Length: 381
Image (tube, rainbow, N blue to C red):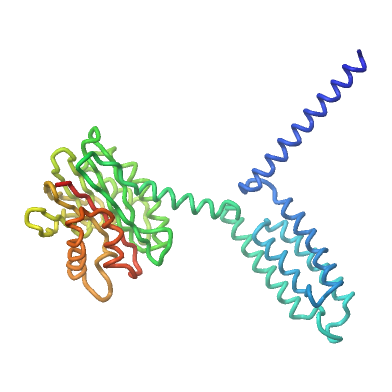
């Protein structure tokens, strides 16, 4: 009986130890792939590849050249921390010395360790060390760097999503960053306020373009999204202007247009901070009318005032907001660009503007090296 209890106790302790080891191994793997854990797994694997490559070089130097040692060094620059990278470099240098001694002087024939081989391996090591040091200084491990950028891009996309509108309304938005990049200086924030009876939309164009303006656009989109709906409509642009001034950026101005639309009546107000006018298509006349409030750029001076302009969307009417990248280029001015935009937009009057935002950018500003954004709101006939 005592013997059986001892065996059960031993088995239980063994299962607990195995369970703890399994949990620790799993946690270590998760931390590693998240970039939070040690890089000893990658270091051990790369250290094993160095003697393997050296042995293959000694056996068949024609098929496995001495320069193949650059491969684990390049991989180490991506995978390892700077301190671990130095250990890998020491192993690679030792392998080169062994290969040089065993293969003989490079003057005696091909497939030897030449000065060029040493320079190539050393150059790869230098570049890898610079990359590892930069990554360590930024504090973003390689395994999380791409994920973080993807997450930032998705946050911008989610923040720019337009809320669903009640029946009888159609809305769509298209955003095209400069140079085909993933980050743009143009962004949209929108919210349903006043008991969901009012749609507030803010279209902003941050100074600069592409990646240069993307970081500032991300910061401003979060701040503007927090302000929108938390303040009365007439208080949004003054608060946004004050926030931008407090950042004290060297290139810190932005243009913005704020739409406040009553979804019951169709009445709207437009407040502008140095932005291009909106375009209002009146279904009765079939003509596009420029609608713009009065106000300076955001981030220029304190105490700026923004005066609204009022209008109303009737059945079949369309309101179009856009940024300057859509209508202004080095070859044409803004007035000519607006004429071209409205001319293309007239083609979608009979189809109800379904999918028109993306096609309009393709038609009028496909190859423009600037951020482009277009927002359409239509009241069904």
